[in-house]
Amino acid sequence: MGLQNPANIAAMVRAAGKKGKHLQFGALVYRLNKGKIEVLLVTSRRSQRWILPKGWPIAGLKPHQTAAQEAWEEAGVRGRTKKHSLGMYTYTKDRKDWRAGSCSVLLFPLEVRKLDNKFPERDERRRKWLSRKKAAARIENPELARIVRKFDPRTLP
Image 1 (tube, helix red, strand yellow):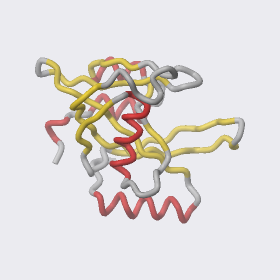
Image 2 (cartoon, one colour):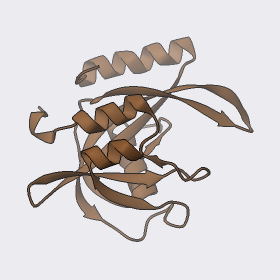
Image 3 (cartoon, rainbow, N blue to C red):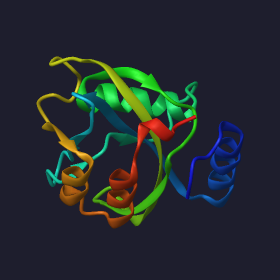
């Protein structure tokens, strides 16, 4: 899936809701460091796997705004989020209070402007800046790893 514009994203969100599908929004947090692209990974709370910040829709926020809010809560990131989605990946969510099921995540690029050491989930997660190639190697989900590996902010609208 390539870049999706905001109108297409709104239609995808409506369709997911009607079909009862589980849809989350995530942020691919990046920066340019000495001309090289770096991606910020965070660990999941329970398994400590390397992932990107993501979460459930937040009432009153658009999908890209929700992705930015999750990046703040999970990684202490403030920045500029694009309204166009980079793509979507799917993973299996298994929780005790919820039957295992498939979740889809729409990803939005977020260029970091500020990285704070005091953020809501700082005691539950670790974060790490890596090249796209090294970040993709640490990510277990092949769809997400492919998006990260191919990501190039210079091609964004």
